[in-house]
Length: 500
Ligand code: C2O
Ligand code: CU
Ligand code: CU
Image 1 (cartoon, helix red, strand yellow):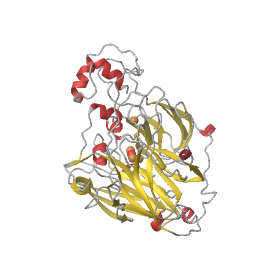
Image 2 (cartoon, helix red, strand yellow):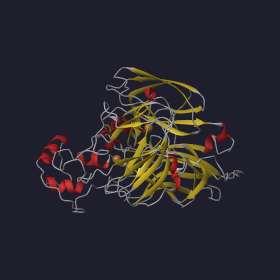
Image 3 (tube, helix red, strand yellow):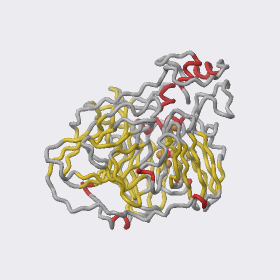
Image 4 (tube, helix red, strand yellow):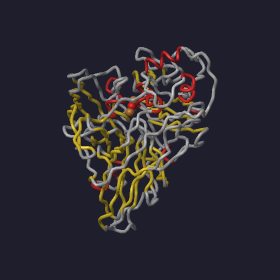
């Protein structure tokens, strides 16, 4: 959405408090539409405020194949005071971290003790449509839902979160999410750092007030996505972790609603990427920084050997380009590492991690084009019909009674996400399937280091068009695909495909 144009056209100034309904009214009266860029009205980024990095990093409880998850109002200590939040654990944000082996039969009972409906989507799990947490499949307030499925996929880091249409953003932001780790024999044979040397990190931003985690997006914040001033890791604001002088495996999820992070280390140490959304890469890739969008995961090795005991360093987010008006303009610290123990470690990074067969583009039987630019001059959507202020895919808003794409089982397709005319980042996510990123044109111009192997979410920056190869298997049913900026998703930037 080109909010600068909108603001000009509607005569609003930034900061004006206007409700959604009066916006619609203003738009109806807007009769002309000229494309004018950079007229000086911009969404200002939410500035990150760091804490003092004095609280130890901790980890959610672990869960296995049988678990009850109670979605509930609870409390958490953030910034020194205990405030109301949501969680699946009795005393904290987030839910337990599942750790299961490939092949396991899983039985998870959701008890909804919220005062509104919810459900759970298993983001990254290839499971039947009726277990996937489709927005139609809900547990009403006080109700329950039983999730039963068998894990049939390679090792990797997935996660879970609510998916009730128009309420996903609020429920996730206020604390409902968790990790789901799958292990298998291929991964075990690599002898990667494990136990205390394998650190799961859920990176999120929150808006912490004395009365709770505020979630009340303005019109502008629906446009850019809702961001918080406080970066929390595993539900803890500005934490620290003590480490030894050896290799660690950091398993990171960007569980934020809208914020992108350009992850790096303050001492510029190498990050060795070994995995992403869909598990291990074929070979490790060494980078100094890497962008991670909401919904994406990264599996990274970092070597603290050679760092003198007593050193303090940070996992940071660096500034980055192409982030639209609201992202990438600030660098900030996320997590402090205190190198506390000298250790010698014999681990060497395997040169080869896994077998990934690249899908030939020529095997695709169909190409589908998705316009995600949301430009005001969107073809097919008139300029003056009062509906411009919504995020759409191909001009359409989510409608659970409409199948947007019919896909044949066991065929490979190319899906094209075209944000070439857009001015906002859109991390696009498909349920029920993993894909390979074929190419990116415009913007960053190429695939980035974490985009080999298997993905379920791909970031499409302003100006970019990204093509992905999707091998649909035999998991028939109705699945959604959407932007994982949760304000965009709740605003309607979600469609459905039927695999049959
Ligand atoms: Cu993590 Cu449909 O999303
Ligand atoms: Cu998902
Ligand atoms: Cu989006």
